[in-house]
Length: 136
Image 1 (cartoon, rainbow, N blue to C red):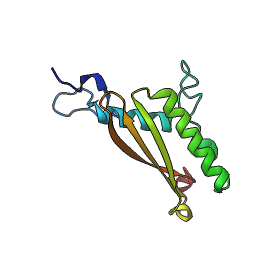
Image 2: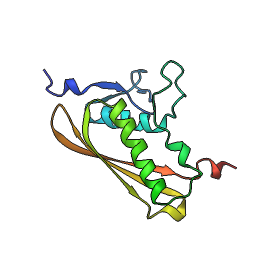
Image 3: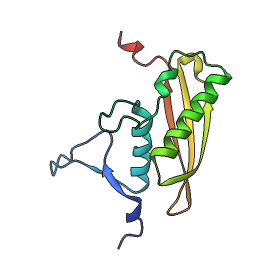
Image 4: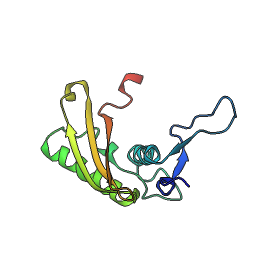
């Protein structure tokens, strides 16, 4: 029996189809947790009709001034969403990297501990301030 099975599995995100089998590809264990975090951060509250509180409203900060208050609110928003919606992780630390701010990008560095294995992991989430502006 696989000792990591309790970490879970789910459909890959974004969804991908295996060319050989025609089935959806799956994400397993630590990868499934990372993909879950991406889904939480990229889903705005209210987008899921049957679960309207699911997600994170970091999109609300797109047009805010990028100052200390903005960065702290962004940290709190991410921390609250992950604490509520990803029960497999704990000891969540959020750092905001603004070195690419003039390129309209903020990097959200997320460190966490996987509860079941007590192993540390991290994820880098690029947050684009002018989302969709290049599509005009």
